[in-house]
Image 1 (cartoon, rainbow, N blue to C red):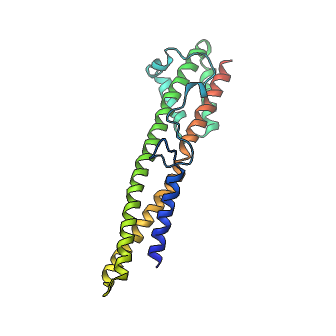
Image 2 (cartoon, one colour):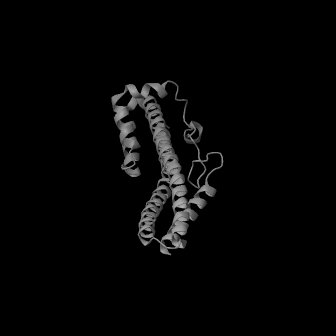
Length: 202
């Protein structure tokens, strides 16, 4: 029956996702290894940030620029130009402003990553619960189909419910696969902007 085939497919997908997850993080649904935070050394080879890590929030120009640069809707070529223009206009304060800007980007993008990753793990937990429910209802449907006499109304009702739940399950899986790329995109953005900032400091 088509309903059972769909349910079996959904559960197979769930099993694949579970095997692909990093065993250290049981709720992590992505094939990419989970790296909870970006380390500063991985993205910054410039001078020590010192107190810039706390001071950047006190500068309204820096905070506004950080918000714009951190937004994924801002294209990278535009973001890089904004960095260059800002630091070119900084003259004597270029080094200080560069450190403040990177400190802001580092904190903001790390927070974005954490938010996305926490969301992925929440969805992963819900998917596991949904898979368990689909499994239970698939067994119930098989029992109803084998029953004598067979209650067609119940078979149809449970079959329709399984179709609906399986489709939702599959749609969520597609979204998860897409969102799994976001932490890497954020990593790449921070690394690229950090490199531009360092180049402009030299």
